Image 1 (cartoon, rainbow, N blue to C red):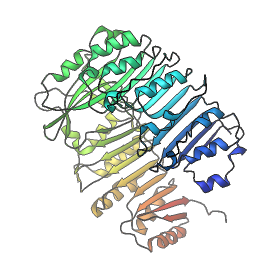
Image 2: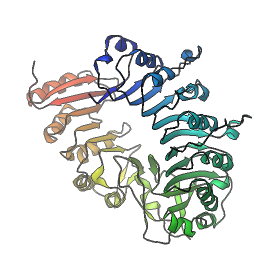
Image 3: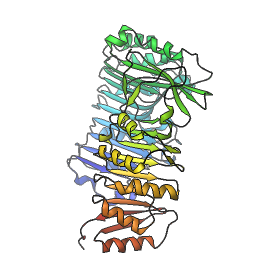
Image 4: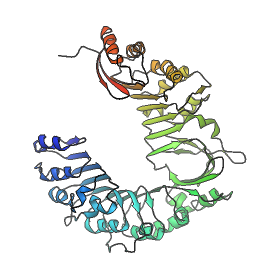
Length: 505
């Protein structure tokens, strides 16, 4: 067995389950709410085959740390790991108590890939010193020492020449000089990704500064991606976008690195708040909210002069605010922004604010690669005005979502919207959809959906208020139609697993 996944382990499960029978286990993922499960892994005898370990821990109980245990050290001593990814949501402990921060690594440990939740310059230096074979380092959140207001300096460190890929996915750093000193420890980087969603000093937005850093510190770098954004404290100058983008229009960026960069200015609250974006293309974000209420890109520019440029954003989850689509043309006195394409989106959430405009489906076709969609979610926070026939739009949309597997509809308890979405969406499901979640309270409606959508294997009925007779009625009606179901009732919904043939006793 090459890979095994353990979801939500508990103490009772650990006592009765024998992991030692998996003698060829290569990869293990642990999702847990207790660090004590790591002690269970240490005591197991699965052998030396384990090379990949993913640890996801979410707890608010600090009691395990009062005795100063180092849960990770015995594991890395026992197993010759090549890949270790640790995701800890344990805010009550403080970052100093996270696993990697307390671990003394064995000498010349062969770890190649490490992903951790949090790091500081000190931890970065310790990693450089103790993991000489590391090639990939991913840090979810990185804070500089000046931000932390500590007096200590980073630990002395020697260069980590083996590291070729570094990702700092959310930095909080007051001084770019601090970052420079850290990058000098990894001169062989070929891939560097850095994102910041908090305020940074102006030097982080300076293309000339980054050019100097790459030339001096990272001579082998060939893949540089970044995404910076911050709120402006006062009304921006009219040429703020051009000032930032001009420093990325040098020969170094356009020819040597062939890097496309965009700068954009966003207006909020009717022009009373502004946000500045600076990012490489494609945008290196995991998920994006696009066309949010009250927000508007009023000006943008790209370092390459190409008015037909399309900015590919490689994300898997996208939220589109449909009611804002007609308003996204640049405001009076500015030019239109470049179009965006989302070619790799797997989950698309459409938030429909008060109206469904004409041309919505055409816009989606031009914006999202609909063929790749696996999950489509509709959110109707309030009553909606449809400027076109929703049923006709859904037929057109579903013709392009060839790989759609899940459809979710939330109508905020609006009976009118429930009826509209039932007739225009639920009854027009493509045969590719296996899972449906919608507010359906009538047995006849349920039967009609299951008779039309032959490939459905699971349906969640959102039931507010809950009617006690609904479960019995629906099961009896479906049995009469030759549809066998297994039902489970939760507080405000019922899950229905569907079998088209009579199950074995």
